[in-house]
Amino acid sequence: MKSIYIAIFALCLTSLFGCAVTPSPPLVSSTIHRTDQILGRSIQDRPISATTLTDTTATSPDTVLLVCGIHGNEAAATPAFWRLIGFLEQNPALLKDRSVIIVPALNPDGIAAKQRFNANGIDLNRNFGANNRKNSNRYGREALSEPESQILHDLILNAKPDRIIMMHQPLKCIDYDGPAQPLAEHMGKFTSLPVKKLGSRPGSLGSWAGNDLNIPIITFELHRDANSIPSIDIWDRYIDSILAAITFPDDPTITTTGK
Image (cartoon, rainbow, N blue to C red; front, side, top):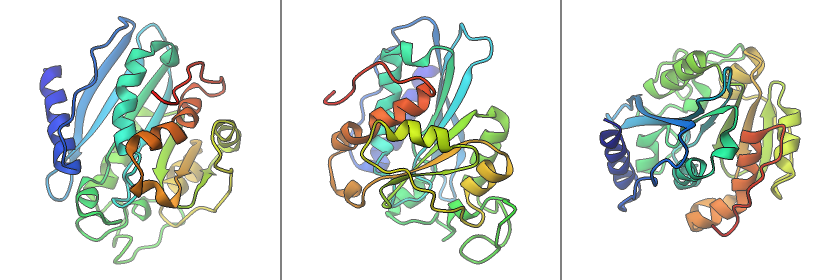
């Protein structure tokens, strides 16, 4: 069954990025359990997948949720997230007492069309039922009107992550909502991006999960040129900061640059 899911993910990446994808190398640690699942489907029936890596020796693992591609034209980190799955499998020490959930492409229709919105023209990062929500044609006439935002909403309520990292572009900073300033400052030690508090947007994931549910959430804003540089450069520039979010409050112990 697992091999079927891996094949599905490879086909998904091929359709999104126009190239063949090699599945991650086999798991090298018997203490790490990997679960691949299809969370649901987009407006245009594309699968939205998640991979969870969990330390089976942990009785109450620290859970980190990583999400990319909620805006379709801000998915420069999506290939790095697929790479991260295999990297974590090969470096299980990073997962000690932890569970990491990775959603590489939340808005696959927007990614395919290279547009911010989903196929219904809705900004998914304004579609959550936050206290500051505003209904509109662009944000959705009601909260969670879109399957993609509903999928992420349900995942957060079910998984109850201890912190959330959302990848965005192009404001080149580490923004945060909820009680996430210590996490933001910790991640900032491993990247040139400055820590900035940009303010919570109406109906955003930061407003709902961060301010309303009190989950530390980071909006990790890549540079403006992120869409035009090779994916390996995205990895080299930013992955140490992402690993710092996973191992928080500890420093990551593995150097990744150039790998």
